[in-house]
Length: 79
Image (cartoon, helix red, strand yellow):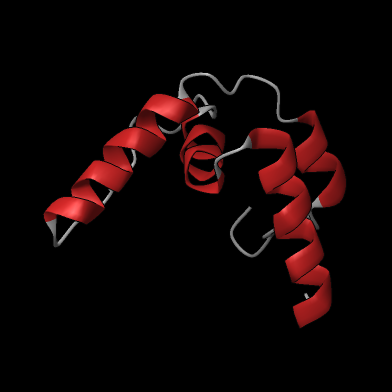
């Protein structure tokens, strides 16, 4: 992505889902092959941000908008 394009996409995603951090977690966890997501936190504030994002992620069920505006990068080396 170019800088301007990325800024527009992030703004659109934030407008649609209200929480980019929560969207990132929800998107990963929606895949049946993903059993868990490792989330790091060094400070109490980071831990609280992660917990809030996780709570927000549980409300996100429809990824249609995100899938329509994001570029697809398909890795095929080991398939």
